[in-house]
Image (cartoon, rainbow, N blue to C red; front, side, top):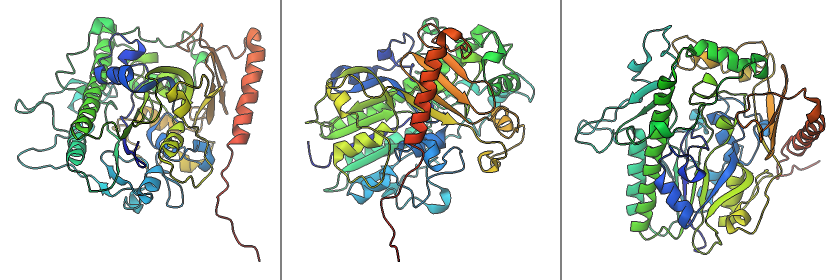
Length: 492
């Protein structure tokens, strides 16, 4: 292994951790990821994000901090200049950092020059214009008040017959990364950061991926709880406002299949990046990380999109795959250990030997990758929500009109009822405990109830387990409550 391996951070947005062929999903079309796990990579079955929406999760996995450590609990509080950030550390240590994709981690008012050498801008010409994304081109929505207005469902996406695929920003970023691999800077290791938009809704994808999904193989959809008292009020409120309770199972199937097609498209793009590395002769010298920032409801519980303070596995469990560079021990396959996205920066630090400059809470995955460790963590944690009166976390900067795609969720996030209650998840292999500040706590036996439909927080037979998980949550909060800077001050 060279002293400074090349690094690829392939970071699709909103990919559920169960939509993977090698994890046993019969409808998932992910041949490139499946091949990687057979040949040279490790995929983690139980990988979890630390917040179920974009910005807080990204701030977490770029620092190794939990969201509460510095208050990163909103889409409008990103990493400030005085805070650590993995890409900046790599740039300062000599990597050529190329960033192609969405942001959601660095404030626009501060720019990108400290974090990367290139913030790639996709070409958009008259000969090859970029298509507008499906947030802007939203004719799929139907009329206000219809059961499609907040559905995020667009379905099959039409493409120019002259193109192999639609020409959107994701494809442009992938093509830009491939061009860099073919023509890299001299004598400098690469760090390619690809935070793609797919499979983030709206649910839309072109052929061949739209038609590649066998609708009859989709796993059963998780139904809403029989009793609303078993779920957080935010979910009940969003379900009412999204207005999709009358959808037939056939309609849900098409929405879900489209999402699976979006994941299949991302798998194809991942394979293209890997092939470009092989063609350039640097695949063996490259560390590749693939993970998503959080998951997606995709019809489970009768919902689409995600929330900021509920912690269902479909939102918090994500794909997480690592291919180390040659010379680093690896036993390809699937690992069942509990891992967190904050383990990503710790693993990069361990692989590269870059200087660690702050206290963080990630743990290197290299022992897991080598197959020499059986356990990693006894529990994983995810958190979100806000305090009553905490205006800074209400996201008042966002569009507050009912026309806004996310109005069913964001309108409730501004409520001073219990809906946006601050909460924290403590999940083990067998149980999930959720403490909610302003409403009923939750406890699930994941062995008997993997769909998390039956809240057993008041079940006397689980009283000992509830106490143990409460104690574990308290210990976690004490251990990670703050971060003492490493640069000390002078005393006079």
